[in-house]
Structure formats: C-alpha cells, structure tokens
Length: 166
Image (cartoon, rainbow, N blue to C red; front, top):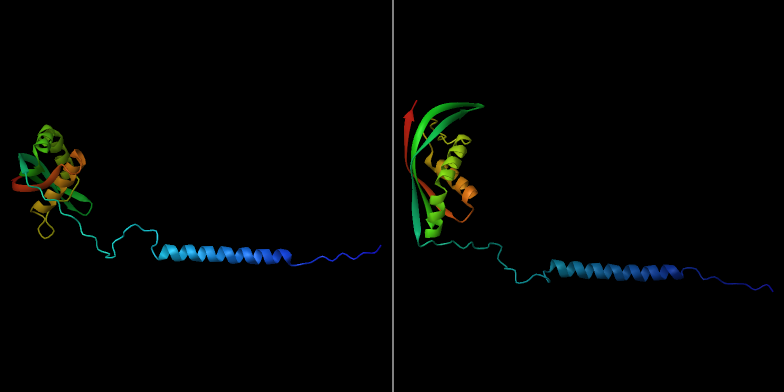
C-alpha cells in the first residue's frame, strides 16, 4: 500500500525556456527586417529630395495703388508713429480666374494688409527711419495667402513707397 509517487520537477521550466527562445528569435527577426528597410516601398537612397519648382507662364499683375498705411517704429516695448506711407504694390497671380478672385477681394485684402502692417516691425535694421520693402512684401504675401488661400498669389512686389510725415 505504500506506493511512492514520483513527481518530476522542471517540466514547466523547459516549456518556458523554449517559448522564450522562440519569442527572442521572432523579435530579433522583426527588428532585423525593420532596420534593413524590408517593408519600405521604393525609398530613394539619396537623402536629398529635389523640390520641383513650379513654372508659371501666364502671370497677371493686379495693382494696388495708393494704399495708405500707418507705420510705427518699435523701440523695446514702445511704438512710435513714423508717418503714413502711400504704397503701390503688384500682386502677381497665375491665370484669369485667380485675377478675378483677387479683384473681388480687394477691400478684404487692403484691410488685411493694414492690419498685418500695424502688428509688424517693418523698418530697416540699420536705419529705423526707412521702410524695408522686402519685409513689407513678405508680410503682404503671408496675409494674402491667409485670406485667399495658398496657391492663389504667386508673388507680391512693392513698386513704390512714399512717406508722408506727420
């Protein structure tokens, strides 16, 4: 009646050892596949990607004449009124449909330009008494893209800026 029952120990540890080995091989193979770029679809080997420059054949200028703009000089946290500038600008668009869209929105664009100018420092760095026309053109371009949407306005150029001192 006394039967000895032998219990074998370590059977479950062998199963865990085999499972751990399989999981390690799976992770290692997956990481190797990922880092070798096996799942990428035709990626260029060259790190630099060329940007295609859009060529506009039919640019049309929409003139903005005698836009009266108050300009302020910023010194620290103070703003000082310099005077009013009368600005002539050309907004260049591609195609007649964009030209019509700009002409329909002239009042909205003028208001946006004046608003953007009043929030920007447009004076030259070396001479705080002169208006920087490149900064002004950038402000006009950003504001026109904001109002009209990107892709409508190709370029903004300032043709003339006349200071009317106070």
